[in-house]
Length: 117
Image (cartoon, rainbow, N blue to C red; front, side, top):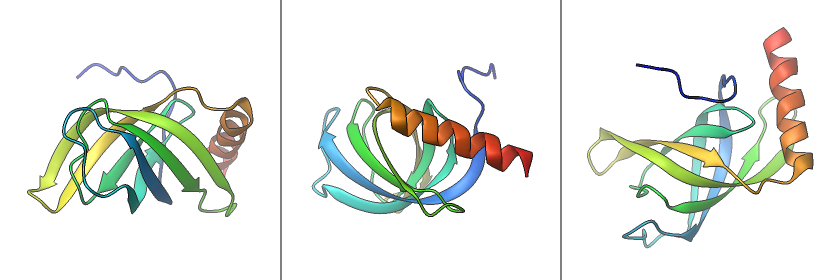
């Protein structure tokens, strides 16, 4: 499989709160979800969730960076979804966009710092 990521990912679980801004088809009934990320980069994240998020679903993600205990808020769009356990667990790839420069800078510095450790 060809690597299509634009930025290097840091494999680390972080607590996230997802607010569904708009659905990409059938929008889930739940609007706020508490889950975790599997990996992060300055351009996106892999997340684990307990509900199916259709491709193109627009999300606001509040991410608490594990070591720093700092919150970062990003806007992202679901690019792909994979069933882990039917009707119980899903993995999704989220691409960030329209993210404030301060959040991107904080993410970049955090990822660089963690990769040096």
